[in-house]
Length: 177
Image 1 (cartoon, rainbow, N blue to C red):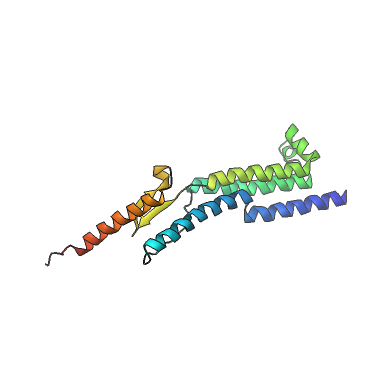
Image 2 (image 1 turned 30 degrees about the horizontal axis):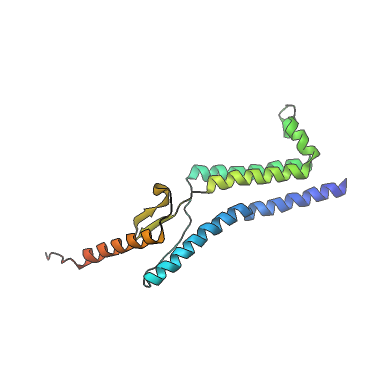
């Protein structure tokens, strides 16, 4: 029995470590977005060697961030309660539902289910799908508005037009006062 409790405690600590570092599905998604950014950056550096390109995360609205943070903490609480075998429903004077009883009989599966299901929801809340492009702080492309990434040809055309417009604006004679 002590060995089982130790194994479940180890699983709980492992879950805590994984929860703080993120799960693999979020990492794959972020690597995919980062890879697209890197491909576009390399192609643009070849065409425009003097341009400076920066990338940053586009955060979701604060309500979603707070819900995801709460869900992360709640997940750890539920996993902890499953591991130590405490019934939170008894604290409120309620009869425990069948799913809780099943979780007590199948602690490893229950912990994994809580962990992966809540991570799926957290990732959905934190994902914006944004790929926003600005030139001199002026938006030139928004994936949030258009619903898709620009092709490299579209992006080059947009940047060429914007740069030509900026050159024309800078070369116009300014009236002297």
